[in-house]
Length: 365
Ligand SMILES: Nc1nc2c(ncn2[C@@H]2O[C@H](COP(=O)(O)OP(=O)(O)OP(=O)(O)O)[C@@H](O)[C@H]2O)c(=O)[nH]1
Ligand SMILES: [Mg+2]
Image (tube, rainbow, N blue to C red):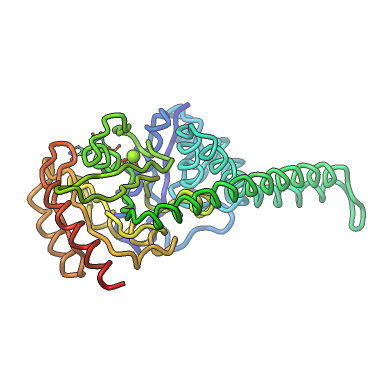
């Protein structure tokens, strides 16, 4: 399989931003081992309601794809079911959008039954609206007004099957959620405080958990979304003081809402934490943008009021310009600490600040 990636530059966000997002889409695809044979950046003020990129562009892509031997078109935005099927018909290519690409990675990475169910739920919820469009077409094929064509009943049966599956998964996940809540309650009763790691995917959250808990068994890898499940370890500071540190799924620009909803039980570990470490990859091209994306996601899940420390990680590789990023964060009233989870630099300072912040918030409550 070889792909073309495409995006609209509406002039709203900076061109750099559209480009950066497209770079990231290429990275997402490389995590699925799908090579990218070409990039298309279409300048238009707003997407075409029927084809997203516009008819002319779709035809251009069709020829381009033949020339470079691509069979998949991946659009770096959200496509409506109609846009997806129109684009597929006009280009002769399989068409994905960014949300679907992210879900495919999650699907590949899911190991535990909880993660698998969560990904399946997200994909089903994503699929159902496109079935509605299909049902409409089928019922038109099936006959005139008032008749239930064979197409429609077939479609209805399929949709009902998916909806039953959704209900079933929701029920199992609700059970997981209740178990987690009881667990959190016990931890709180035992006086254990929880710090939750949040941040962009690949920013180094799991590496930080491994370094701070000294558990070499924790998996950290140079690939997107390597962690999908919650892992909690205890961290011991000097003189016996300690806390629980919890790692979870990473964030990315335009994380599909279906995934956020489906991972609710996992993300409850974040919303129920006493404090957050917002891990930022200081060596990435736009650390401040990544921080904004994480903050937006925290707002979405209702975790933006939890006390936090911004952990500027990968300092061993960061450039000079990081000081400006840090100054921007500090002027936005963020508390920052520079560390390298890999070399261990800055970790004693992070522990000191964590203690101060946790004890401070205890005295206030
Ligand atoms: N140079 C350098 N690399 C680091 C540092 N911390 C993490 N890394 C590397 O960054 C990559 C991603 O690290 P992870 O800890 O898996 O990142 P994560 O945030 O858990 O990522 P996901 O689970 O995919 O969301 C790995 O290759 C790490 O070795 C650091 O301080 N310095
Ligand atoms: Mg991880």
